[in-house]
Image 1: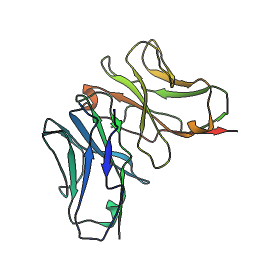
Image 2 (image 1 turned 135 degrees about the horizontal axis):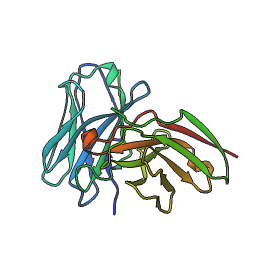
Image 3 (image 1 turned 120 degrees about the vertical axis):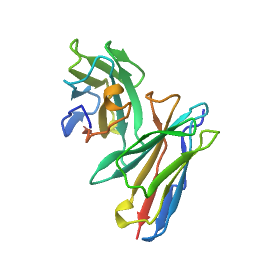
Image 4 (image 1 turned 60 degrees about the vertical axis):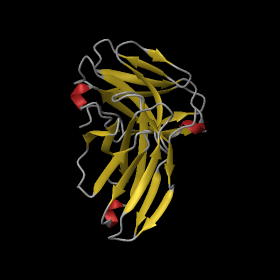
Length: 112
Length: 111
């Protein structure tokens, strides 16, 4: 089976812009979670989607949003980018909520 | 919040067993112990998980104490490619069924 894929792998944006990241889960997996990883804060949970519904949300401002499509693919959007949004954004998929998560390679976002 | 504590860093000689400890003294009876590792700038990789019994797979062994207050991940024959940050995570209803990644243990395998 193919693993979790994320696109794009690298992205450079400027402050104030918005960005959309995409995640394709492992075939058959219905839950998708997003994480932000920075050197200072480590790996932090953003949100989790299951069957197109947001099930859990981390402590991030409303500029961070996401959605899941009927084929379980997911996107996350960050609006009005700030320098501090520079990070590695990781997507993970699992069969169900609260089961083993398998991570993609991440999208590295640099905000200038 | 993370419910596990791990040493910040450890070294292990190549070819020897690497034993990574994790303390989870407040874990509840229905929370699983998960282990992941992350090699620099890559996505975390699932290693193993368990509830009460010891578990073994092709990557590692997980030893959970009888009182479930701590566990040890064992890499039987460490190689240089095992150099990574290892995360111990408690997963269950008490943690909102979310994976909380703490700071982990940075394992360096030395030639």
